[in-house]
Length: 117
Image (tube, rainbow, N blue to C red):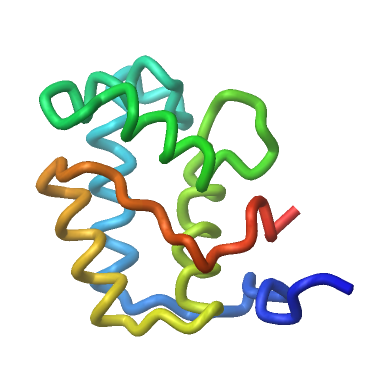
């Protein structure tokens, strides 16, 4: 069967402002500028806001290939999937702002687990 909402979300367009914030957040978390975020970097990002819990939830949602790293493409792909399943640009911008403010990672219950594989 499968979830038809998860099909072909790669063609989804995100607003330019969202893409800029996504890039800024990624670069801020990726402290060693390796082009990928590891769990230690994620924990450090959320150090005072339930760091281990937020990092674990972040990886559960965003690490599509389960390799223990979140690549920039995976991060963008996650936000495209969020939009594809029905979240508005306004909701995405609000969550990105929360993320930029280092609020606890909320995840999205309506996103199929690793739907973009």
